[in-house]
Image (cartoon, rainbow, N blue to C red):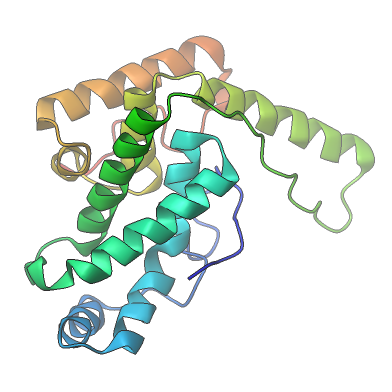
Length: 214
């Protein structure tokens, strides 16, 4: 169970953020879950395809290490498969999987306090881009990545779930094992810190507004 790594902080709205097939309808995903709980491995594979890149991207922002994020993502889906029959139909499957991933991250952090810093490889430059514009874009991306990486881990985790995953504060709280009020406060503080160090045009999409579903 392995997938090619994807770079963090992709522009919002450009294609499917899962990097896979088009978004399934709620009824389709519910059917996949039912089939997977009945033992259909191909149905579970579709769920993995749907959420792998999203989970990996979030875990990468927490670990700042490609290999650690890859290992945690794989372990998360293995644990999800083992616990699949405990998932309650009608619940938010994405939030459930992210919760398992967060637990794995916390456990790993407790076991190994060493922090590895590793910037992602540069994405290929779009056709027609000049060397100057490419360098400027790379520099701007690195500035944003450093600012996000410098956020305290609880703030960074909450911000990425709210802004890039579009989870409600209630769902963010469930993933992180905290209260809705604390989740809201962490997102607010993360935005506040980013606004102090980044110019408006460099802020990640959605990092300024409070347009997070209640």
